Amino acid sequence: MIITIASFKGGVGKTTSAIHLCQYFATRKPKRRVVLADGDPNRTVIDWAESSPFDLPFAVADASGELPEYEILVVDTPARTEPNELADLIESSTLLLIPSKVDIFDVRATLALADTLRPYPNRYRILLTGLPPRGKRLLNAALELFNEKELQVFKSGIQHFTVYRDAAYEGIPVGRYSEAGKRAMQDYEEIGSQILKGWKDG
Ligand SMILES: Nc1ncnc2c1ncn2[C@@H]1O[C@H](COP(=O)(O)OP(=O)(O)OP(=O)(O)O)[C@@H](O)[C@H]1O
Ligand SMILES: [Mg+2]
Image (cartoon, rainbow, N blue to C red):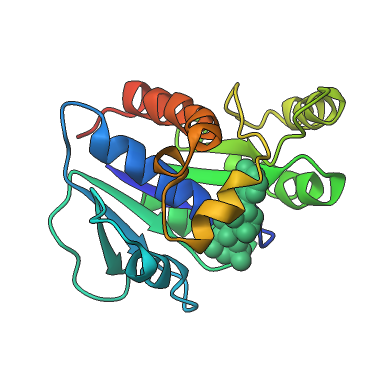
């Protein structure tokens, strides 16, 4: 299974999603060989993994080089994908995961892709990230706009927690960082479990 994580605006949680989904896939039984391929020329994932004080349960590799064997491959991509690359990304992946914040500028950047995404309802999902901890007003407003355009969105999202930034500094997946991190990780566990149930091609 190949999960590509891409977005049409930078800084929406692609790399954070890639790391924490890999952490989930690699530690949930039965254990699977998981590879996180860094496709960002900034080498964000590679540098993060090198800064980690732990042996990670998944392998990290440069997406442009040779990849270790995998059962699940997660590909992190550069800050912003061009809309004309979208169809290729979908064709080369089991699932294209598109993180989007619920701020209107982020939502509009994703809505602009509706026509390209519509023919592939089972090959992509939008993942709402950085959700405000209180109040569902923005979440509901974003969901309504995505629904109007028949875009497929995961029913649950990723809440905003400061622990993501703190843990990233130390090269530690949030679930191993603190109790607050374990709580934050539950959002990714829910998404990871939906992916394993919904996209079973190995
Ligand atoms: N759910 C969250 N709550 C709080 N902070 C978050 C969350 N997700 C990510 N962050 C923080 O937001 C910043 C951007 O996240 P990240 O690097 O994952 O985004 P990105 O889409 O990969 O960015 P880029 O487009 O630059 O590659 C990081 O500092 C990260 O720690
Ligand atoms: Mg990134």
